[in-house]
Amino acid sequence: MKLIHGVKIKVLKVIPDERGWLMEILRRDDELFREFGQVYVTSAYPGVVKAWHAHENQTDSIACISGMVKLVLYDEREESPTKGMINEFFIGEKNPMLVQVPAYVWHGFKNIHTDVSLVINIPDNTYNYEKPDELRRPAHGDIPYDWERKDG
Image (tube, rainbow, N blue to C red):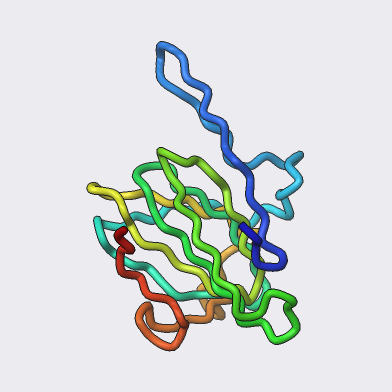
């Protein structure tokens, strides 16, 4: 798949043993590491879409740590060589991956699992409660993407 300009991915490795498993998501010596802002986790119930949002200055690094989600990115940046491109990533338990989303790239996800999915984000900036760096659009609006399941 051709990636939207500035998007980076890292396949995550699960290390199992008889006690359970461990999965490193982001290290400061990773190529994807930019700067530490904060870490948070969000949940979504089956079939729920959490979209669309983008940031003016922030880069997000997103992984699904429980369940499965369809993470979708849309590039609307005028100066971008991939303007108009959409990327879909199916990430989570069956495909552990970290997806890094640059500023001004619209993104959101849909829970495609049969139970609650947990998504972790490691942005390179902290959330500013007084002046959030967050642009929002409706999930089913003017971005040319259909969140419905594609059978066939």
